[in-house]
Amino acid sequence: MPYARIEIPADWSLCPRPQLLQAVDAAFVTALGVPPRDAFLRLFEYAPADALIPAWHGAHFIFIEIQLFAGRSLEAKRGLYRALVDQLEALGIPGNDISIALVEIPQQNWGLRGGQPGSELDHGFVIER
Image 1: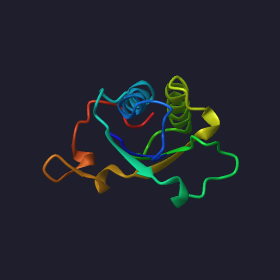
Image 2 (image 1 turned 180 degrees about the vertical axis):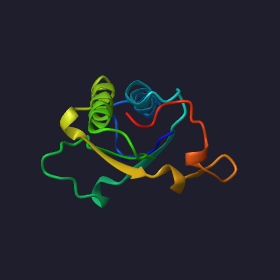
Image 3 (image 1 turned 30 degrees about the vertical axis):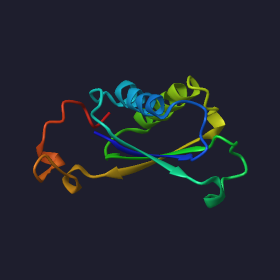
Image 4 (image 1 turned 45 degrees about the vertical axis):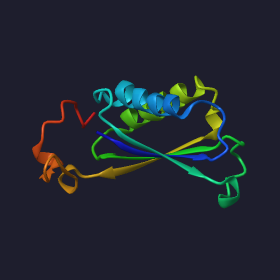
């Protein structure tokens, strides 16, 4: 049940925004084994003049910050990075323009479904891999 903040320039023209969100969701399903549409995805646009992009990124820079339960192995994280890049490259987004940050949150620090700690819920997928 990851949450993701996806940041793109306001003049984005590479692909329709719904396709972008669907691609990120598909990467979570593939790499993390979460059910489809289990993630909360938010798309934010910024004016190109309001951002200073690293020199090694191109004009279609996309930044994805993902909050998820702690406990996945480095191998699982690599799989997630690869799945995101694969999905987004299929939409025409160059791999070098994709930057991803993971924020891992202990399950007991995430309140869900009426205020229950995430550590006390069955999520329907494996967290530790």
